[in-house]
Length: 109
Image 1: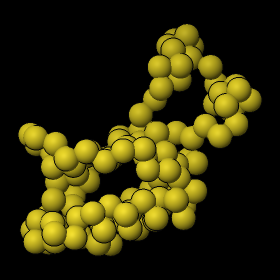
Image 2: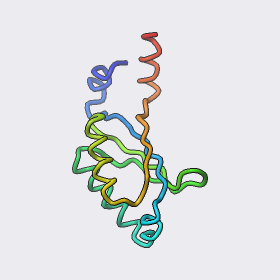
Image 3: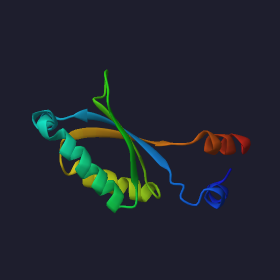
């Protein structure tokens, strides 16, 4: 299914992004205000036309996993650049494809 087909069926569909985050020393020092930082991040995402899907504190290599939607890749980069200004974490962000999107790509092989 192409993006155009997806939008015709689900007009509000937006691409998904998964951010893998490691707290910086500033981020660890600011943990008492973590809830406020998450809420600020949600406002930044929404102001750029996106939606925060979920935030998860994790065990292992990354401290936090954040999943959000954005209208397109350019807007996702804009969101990430705005969030990086706080200096609370280092991020690695992945563009996530739904099962339907992946199947459409595979059909074109």
